[in-house]
Length: 318
Ligand SMILES: [Zn+2]
Ligand SMILES: [Zn+2]
Image 1 (tube, protein in one colour):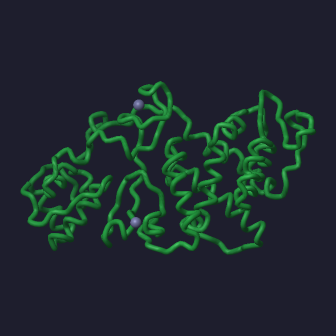
Image 2 (tube, protein in one colour):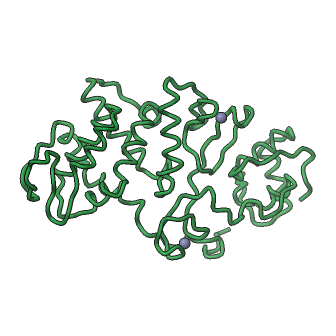
Image 3 (spheres, protein in one colour):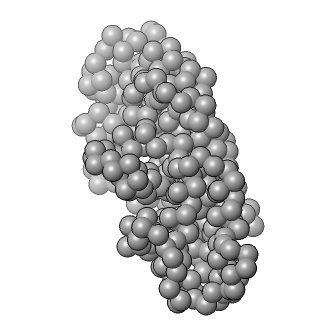
């Protein structure tokens, strides 16, 4: 197809749909009109407007190389462990997934609605704006949010954890339980509100629970639910108190070696698995969630197989 009269510059990681919508707007068309034209030029496309089904045509319309959307660029992918990198966490062109599409900061995109799949979270440190799911909101404690954003796109990304892989969401849920309990705060928050309100704490809790020492603890099946609930309870309390010292002491408190478990107090003798522990009220609250906590916070470490490529997929029914 011919290049459209007005083209747009793609943002790094911009999705096919986002570029399509901007082209439509720029050329004063409707999404349906442009799709009808594309369907006339290419056989076998669905009736419903689905630019993802014709990425090469969308690229051509914007005067970009036809393979613009399927380059082997790995920079935005989440790290994963696979055979191609000796099972170490790496950004593999065949196995590592892209994060789910997310809306870009409205100020970074000069006011346009842009959707990208890139190495980013929900907060723009440059403009101090919360941009999750199309929002453009000011944040009261930008320093804490900027730190969380750095941790998410640095440490956590390197472990294969992004905004949509489940860990941050569960961490928000746990922090929310803690807040309800400590502040006697009974306001019910939606998942989006929890993410916005608890972002810094949720990122820090996720980083703690996916650090090597906590991972060894969670992975050790000799350790029952109770000590895990105690560890999570202590970690949440430390994170919420914003005390680095307290968090590092939780690290030291819960060091598991073999079947034995050391608990905090240096003079305490190693405790045998199964003996009742002081798990605290918060530990009691998260106790029933321990199987899910274990599953979600260990998942990023699973080895991956190559993702299905277009060639591997069965032909679509037409
Ligand atoms: Zn691989
Ligand atoms: Zn921005």
